[in-house]
Length: 173
Image 1 (cartoon, helix red, strand yellow):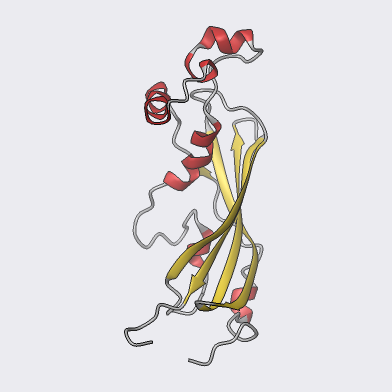
Image 2 (spheres, rainbow, N blue to C red; image 1 turned 180 degrees about the vertical axis):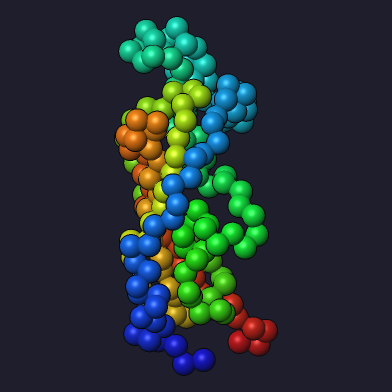
């Protein structure tokens, strides 16, 4: 296969930069979700567990651990073949053989505290698509941004995430 970083990104793929997914409501996290988080991590911060403590610290009630807010967009379950996929990267017209997906980096920013039971919604968009040669051959690097907003449409969390897609190698290659 004669692919190069200069030729692998088609005009059709390049036009996907700026593509936005639908706004999706996220699963509302409950006290039992927080208890499971505390049990798994040992992070028994009273801000997550005690309404009175959280109020004494200036909040209206218990907060969600930020890592739970950050994980929730990744836990969305979608039916097979969903054309309006939340994860817009899955809609991209990449070459068919590029099925070997690798994490190529992530930057996360928590902007506002989120309270227990607070409804959240998320939207993702493609912000960059590039190609470059590496040890695994030519890779297509797709960067998308996920934004999580509260019911007041305030941005509470943002993640800039890059995945690298490589051509699946056949035996003997």
